Length: 204
Image 1 (cartoon, rainbow, N blue to C red):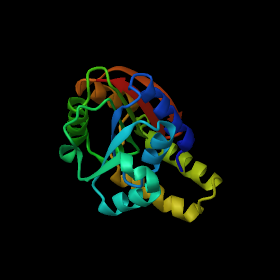
Image 2 (image 1 turned 90 degrees about the vertical axis):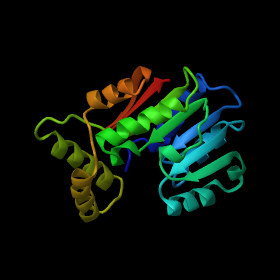
Image 3 (image 1 turned 180 degrees about the vertical axis):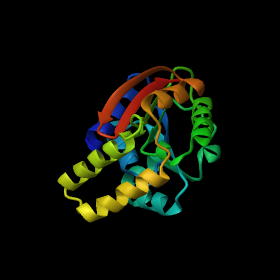
């Protein structure tokens, strides 16, 4: 349901590796499910990871997905305030920040920034699209249409579209970039756009 999701993970790994050392310690915020951890661990066999997620069930799933790779991963139940202090060589937060309201999002970004070494890369990706009148309906209809074209039942997507519009804290791209700057990140660059989703790389 996320256009080019596997490619997004590969791009994120490439962007992290531009500055992270071969033995990097990487913070993964929103690690539940384990798909990003697995992709990064397979791509970079000498990296180690700390994954943070508020859902114990999703962390259990991550452990199953990781299998033998789990020896390089420490999983932490909770939010960013429960994450290790670092300092980390890189961090990601993929498909997570749209669950967090604006003020809590700024706090989260600042806490990630505080845990990173100077110049360390940080990759984020989540729902983000213009917020002019009518924009939300347009972009969520496109998101739903893509999901249906990918094999999801249309009735399920109609329910999902309504729920997303009502529950998620979706910001305009310029607001997302502004929060990254306010949290202390620099060199902010858009590297991914897939219909209703956007992704940026920035640096501590």
